[in-house]
Image (cartoon, rainbow, N blue to C red):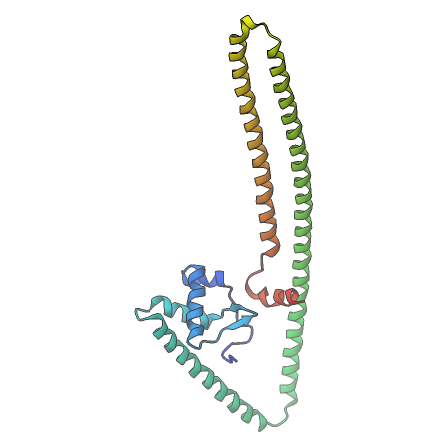
Length: 248
């Protein structure tokens, strides 16, 4: 387990690391896999890596190296192990030192003051998180309402389009029946007129079908945006807290 993480140290998402280091998001994942393959330890939330400042330094080293990536990764892992061993030795030394310190009321008062301040900060953070969750629920509810409204409009529009198509088909059939009753002497002329009219009707039908297809595509695009809005995860220092709500 890593012991080189400082209290309240900022955590970075994969996208934030990519912007910080100046590489693509897939490259961040690739470097992470190379480091883990050689024994590097990341903080993780399930299968998702959580990056801290020292991890960014390791990614920068891989980005700037002229050596094979696995070789550089092994050097980084060795450095990490040395830091972890050093951290363990420091923890042991501090424990031995404080065991010999006499009881100090003033020192205890400072500790309690620190705990009270941390508790107040945590409560403030929880209040902010509650407000953020309420805002998110409102946004999702509004998106769902818009989704229903758009679905209803598209359904009505599709029904109207189908009625128009049926009417046009009836008109075309009626026109054909009328042709049969025309005088034979005008047959050629009427046939040419009918052919032109039929082409116009066919073109109109094609236009209406294309319009219907566009409306359905608009609905599909909206559904995708809705899904992305619901699945979007907050960034930065709130990631750990949001993950607890997801696990629940």
